[in-house]
Image (cartoon, rainbow, N blue to C red; front, side):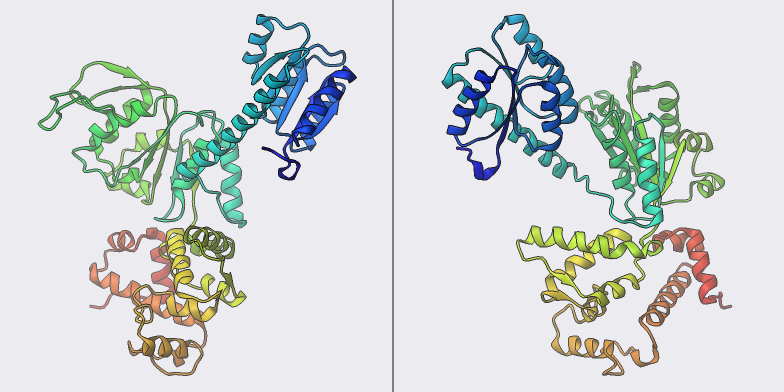
Length: 479
């Protein structure tokens, strides 16, 4: 039974003092917290300021009609349950109240048992609606876009401007930088948010199957087509279709996607009937599509169709100031998942995290935080970050000598690690990081015979970014 301790507040709006007093007496006896006002205008103010769980509202009132109060209140709190009460109840009035969003309708004078049952059911429904919304958000995995850096603030502002429109959006950025999250928020804040968001990873689907995946197929259209299949475009009807890694789509599929965007129609593989679709397309890629167009791998007309709005998600290395905010949030979530007390970060640990190369971006950061939570003590230190930064580090294998040696190097107490690295020659963590990055890039370039495009793809960074690194470290191809 609800009680005053759990803060269940019920608002009574009625211009008859006797009715308000009677309802208050009944509800307070049941241990509800009761607020009562004699007009709709004051009632709306209470709804704005107090955490009200339920409203009992008279229909016939002088200053503002109960139906008006209902309509205005649901604009403020769409899920707030309303029970309408009236001494002139008719079936038509009850139907109208239900259409406007009321939970139930009760005639005056109210029957005590019916009133209490209706109140209890209305409160339970309100709780279920709230819980359902929370669960839907968890299932959809739509997490907050974390960070306060200028690039992230610009992305948030762009999402707020663009989401309510029907404009197509092309999201660019390195792997793991958060392109999918931007796409989810574009859908979440759009007018299509109640319709499905259908995701397709174009890189994960073989080129010979991508057309069937996108447009569906008819039974018997090819050897393994044993039954009709509805494609992603049809599944996303009235909603949003997210084409991730569109730079990996075959030219044949690109031509069909272009036609679908131009005509809002598709044809299933092996079919002849044209099917009308109403879909908003959001695409994402980690490739330089202009370079892909130049190389003959991507259609220029499709690029222009997709890139009405361009959103670039910067790599984590370009917004290091956001790392402490993101790390704290990941720490909180992972500790909750593991059912353990939340761990804290020493200030120096944040600085050490900010100085790491982060070639894997947000995804890599989350893995790092999970590793630190598992392997560190209550407070995550700079030493922990140095020791566990590399997932292949011998320290992670649990070898005490390796851990001691690596930790000693971080503190300047030893000249080498089991891998034979002399840490004394580095004056700062940044120097060590730069040397490691230089060696890594040089190795990858030599492995790929100095093919810059292939190397950029292999290490998952933009080609222009790789050229900057080559220039920064003075790397040259040896004859």
